[in-house]
Length: 234
Length: 302
Image 1 (cartoon, one colour):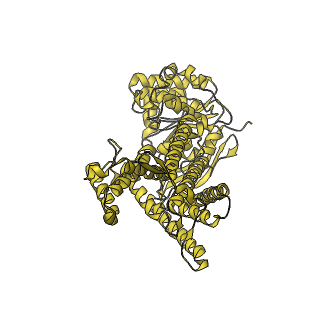
Image 2 (cartoon, each protein chain N blue to C red):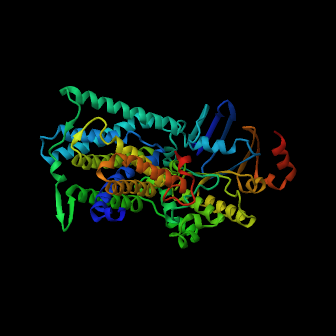
C-alpha cells in the first residue's frame, strides 16, 4: 500500500499543563480532501499548528509521505511540500499583492511561477501592484490561498478560510477548494461551517476536547440531526 | 546670536555626524527588524573594529581597513551564532539584558588586551590623514566628513535596492513584519537573520573606520557614548521601521552637531544635557516617535 500523504499517530499537544490534543490519529491519502470540524477549543487549529511545526508535539508521530516531520522547523516543513493558509489570512498588508505571492515561492526549490495563481484568480493579476491591505476580505482570502498554492504544495492545510466572510464569498471559497481538489492537491480543511465541509470532503473528522469523536462521510451532510449529534456528543 | 552661529560650517559638520549616526542606526535597526533584539553591544563591535585598526596601524591602509571589516563581521556572526540564536524566542527583556552583559564582556576583554603595554588606549595613526580638511570657499570640510556622507548615502541606497528589488530582501522585510508567517511560507530564518547580522557587521566596521579617523585614540569605551545616543535616536525616530529608525539616528546626530556648533566652546560640557533635553521634548510632543504616524508609543516599544 502506498504511504498516506499525511499520517498522525496518537499525537499529544499541550499548552503548558493544558492538553489541547490527546491521542489523535488519522490519515489523509493522496488526492483526498479531508475535513476537520468541531466546536471552539476542540483542537482543530492546534492540530494544524502541530503539523506545520508551529507548536511542538509531546507524543506521537506525524508523517508526510512516510517521513517523520516531528521536531522540524516550520520552514523545513513548508519546503517539504506542506502549505498552510493560516487563520485570519496573515497576508502582508503593506506589501503589494505580487510581493505576497512571491513570498509563497519561498518554500520552493528552484524558480517558481506566478502565472498559474493568476490564472486561478484573475483578480490578483489585475491588482498585483496594489498593496494587499487595500483588498477586500474575500480578495485577501483568495490571495492567502493563492500564496499557498504558488509553492506547489503536495498537501494544503486551510485554517477556517471562510471565517469572517459574507455568505456569497463563503460559497466562492468552497468552489475554489473544489477546483484545487481537481488539480490533485491533497487538502486538509479546518472549518466551522460543518455542513458545507462534510458535503465537500471525502471524509470529515469531528474533534471535541482534543480527541477524535466520530467520522462523517459526504452522505451525512444532509442529515442535520447526525451533524448536531456529532457536535454535541462531547 | 544663535542664527549667526548656525553657519554653513556647522551644518556641514552636523550632516557628517548625522550620516555616521544614521549608519549605526541602520545596523541596529536591521538586527532589530528580524530578531526584535536591541543590540546594546553594537558599540563594542565598533570598538573592536577600532582596536583592529590600531593594532594594524603599521600595515598598508587598505590592509588595515580590510582587517577591520573581517574582524568586525566575524565577531558579529559569532555573536549571533553563540548568543542570539540560543536566545531566540526569549522575551525582549532577556535579550536586551544579555546584550548589556555582552557589551561589558567585550569591553573587559578589550581592556585586558589593551593593558598589556601598561597603558590604556592605543592610537590608530595610519588612517588619521583622512581627517585633513579640504578648503571650499570659506568652508573647511574634513575629508572624512565627505567620506561619511558618501558612505552613508551609498550604503543606504544599496540597502534599499537589496530590500526592495531582491528575493532575499523581500524575505527580510517579511521576516521583520511577521516572522512566524514568513517561516510558514518557507522563508529560511537562519539565512535571513544571518544576512541581517552580516550587513549590520559591515556597517559597524564602516562606522569603526570613520570614528577612528575622527578620533584615533582608541580605548575600551570607544563608541560607547555614540551608541547610547544612536539608540536614543533610533527609539525617538521609531525602531519598528528601518527608515524611521535611520532617520531618527540621522536626526539626533544632526541635532547634536547643530547644538555643538551653537554652544560657545566653554559651554560645550552642556552638549549632552541639551541633546537629551531635546529628546525629552520630542518624546513629550510626539510619543509615537518623531517619524511614526498613528503608531504605538516609543515608550511602549522599549
